[in-house]
Image 1 (spheres, chains in turn green, red):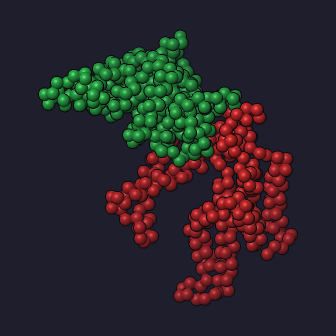
Image 2 (image 1 turned 90 degrees about the vertical axis):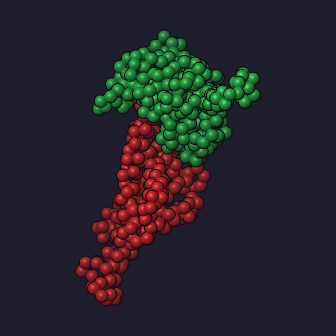
Length: 274
Length: 268
């Protein structure tokens, strides 16, 4: 059923040997071309949800999955990891462990996935150039992957996942180890990828300013369950956010501070502040 | 391996052919040279074996332009070399040609000669391995192994093991810095330095294990376990004479060891 999106229905997950469930009754839908932000305190289940959506839990790491995870109508349980990698790409926090460590140039690093699929050479080359353009890192192609900045390495890891042409991307805190410049690079690339490639993106992010910039919807997890969800602007302005361990974006905090000081908050003021 | 017309689509920095006589050899030829160096350095009696290996390795390094970069590898053999020199010079069994009496210790000429010979073997082997590592990119070696039918898992294990060495060294350095910032003394006497190593073991070992799990998942996310043969982007130069040379070198080195051990030819 193509075009059905990435759909989680009543998903629960328990790690092998764990007494408590890491995820409880999660319902979530990701449409192509949309960006869904995932926030929550540490240990709230965000990274686990990423592994479940990408099929690595329980596919690779074991554990028990309840409910249904479907990618374009196909149950992830029915797919092998390499098949799932072509439908739903996963980017981890640490770019250093995501790169193969066995290539001499960024071009070859990005070609690693397509080469694993045994694609014809011309197709591999075409995919690599496409992924480099999509991530906005064409000038990095000849560089040694081991000698990149954190932001550049994360973008190379992102392009490496994109080269498998997945319809959906799951990104686990892609900016957590980056400085403001690196964060801006990655956030701009994600917004461009969602807009230009039509990929659906599920992004875990502590930096709510990034979510405010790129997400259409935001889901907040607490103890493995959905505590808040809805359009990004409304969810990120929800007064319960702080109690859930998530700091609201700077714009929301500023608005609250202005209101608290007795100054009338208007649309014109918001636009003037930017 | 992709056809020649598709290979032409690759950028020049991917199609790269390593320049220089030694560098441009096929990775298997370089691996064979390293293996033969080990066989000859340790298998041929006397000074001839290790001396020939050392001469060939140093001249190849000069041609390949990596002579200076081999210095750290030579330094890395120092602890082993020091122990060989001490043990052989002072404790060589049944040697009576004493150089001098130093209290309870009596270094002997026989022991010193054996020590120098063993040192030459270790250094020759160490430098031949260094020459191979410095002139052979990991991906070239992996591509060549896969082209020869070694499974992608097997070849990746070789490559990632080689790649893991600098990462582990880097992590060890970070842990040492962290321990120092917490007041641990890792400088000075040998015993202090050794004590400083103990707290390294846990973080480095567990860090490496955690990294293995993350890497495994990352590889799965990049279709590493897809069935069938991987695409190999570029062919590395190989030729009839290199194939013949590999076999000749292997057979020749084994023959040299046999002749040397049998005492058929007296070598210095």
